Amino acid sequence: MTATPPSTAAAVPRQAASLIVLRDSPRGPEVLMLRRAEKPGDQNSGAAVFPGGLLDTGDAAIYGLCDGLDDAQASARLGLPANGLNYWIAAVRECFEEAGLLFATDAQGRPVALDHRAADELLTMRHALHANEIGMAEVCARLGVRIDVGALAYYSHWLTPKGMPKIFDTRFFITRAPLNQTPLHDAKETVELLWITPAEALDPARGLKLVNVTSVTLKALSAFTTAQAAIDAARAQTEVPLIRPRLATTPKGKRPIMPGDWAFAEVGRLDPEGRGHVSTELAPGVPVWLSPRILRVTAPNGSMMTGPGTNSYFVGAPGGDDWTLIDPGPDDAAHVQALIAAAPGKVSRILVTHTHKDHSPAAAALQAATGARTFGRVADHPEWQDTAFQPDQVLADGDRLVLGEGVALRALHTPGHASNHLCYLLEEEKLLFTGDHIMQGSTVVINPPDGDMAVYLASLRRLLDEDLDWLAPGHGFLIDQPHAAVRKLIAHRLAREARVLAALQAQGPGAAPEAVLLAQVYADTPAHLHGVALRSLRAHLHKLRADGIALMDAAQAWRLK
Image (cartoon, rainbow, N blue to C red; front, side, top):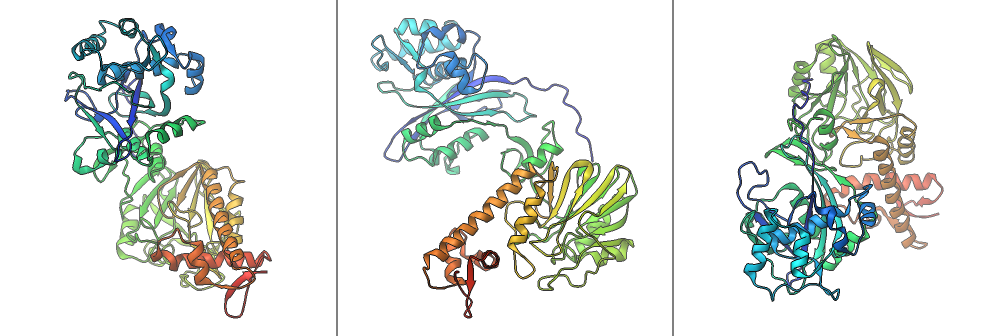
């Protein structure tokens, strides 16, 4: 694996605030956006953005001119020890400076009106504020107002990805546009002001340049039918998590990817400095070093069932000439040749997680080419299995294989998806090769009789007792926070089981054929996937029967016991 060189000039985060201003319209909520001027060295040059900018050293001096929040309340809301109010003040200041909207109250405590004031007077004041010739204290004095920070709701917290030349630590706020004020761009930092619906702003035909944080925010705002609903949702948040995207290589070039994207955790592991060279695609036949001990090669068998394709993993001691291959994959000539070409050294062992036909059939060709011994188990039922696979050594739960200095694998028998399913724990990295026990982006099919839902859930729960840092699935990228992923899978399966139980209860004393139950339980699943979903439905029904809850009659219809 090529090591990522340390950054020689890591950018220091700059504290900033941004304000999302909404108003209602017949087309739905509109958001105020400003198109930034083209400027060399500005990574947001020409982009359509929300008003915002950097905090100012003088912000703390005007706490006494703020209503609606004090610094203790503002800091607690942001999770800061002090000076949280600076962010609210900066958001108000930048919105007035860039867009001409001022969130303030007059001497009677009423929202300030500015439309009666001369436009030139206000623009001159804004330009002076931008040039640091005056501060917000003087703006308030000239206009006879106090800053209404209480009008702003805290919305989100973003940190620019590592690897960017400038890093901004930005708090976003949201509010409704004030009455009796007409926004106007400042003609300095911005060249155009827009009132636009989120959907319109996101429409490629509109041609707006949008940075990642703006696109993500607009997508979230598009779910609301009124401005107040979006503001209420922001105020209802009990916790606002920090969002920090990561730079990666996508089909469109180097781009930020978000938490939740399939490659996100893997990108963070392989590129801690943010160079952006890690791919978001699992390209068939391309070797990818996941650590000095692990090399992954993906098979060219991507499909609805296999996702981006089956992952094969070489595991061995760094620099050694004794390597083990986990899951050789399908019997595909191009894939076999790719594995032979990618092997970091002599392949002495071939381990199989289970014998479904996308995981084990290439073992025969690779054994013939390398002389490696095969390890695994034989399934209890032959349906859907690679029955040609007969391991040289049958592995039992807890068997430990020492592959070299500082490299040991422990076998975990994890039946459920298949009766012979094994996971392999790389002890030194607390990384579990999961085969199809856990795959990324989808739940695995449990297909009776070899598949068993009750056994599968038990096999998932046993992983909660293992000390794990990473999952290396048979399909997909590396997965971090393994226990959270396992709990999510268990919760999903139990929620689906609850829907099966509810569908049976809805039948009353009568019995329902599987087709009727399928339509109800998997109503949220596209019809073209119902054939696959039927297998998992049967697994749930068989579990309920084993639990003494459901019965199947002679016509293969189901009812409660």
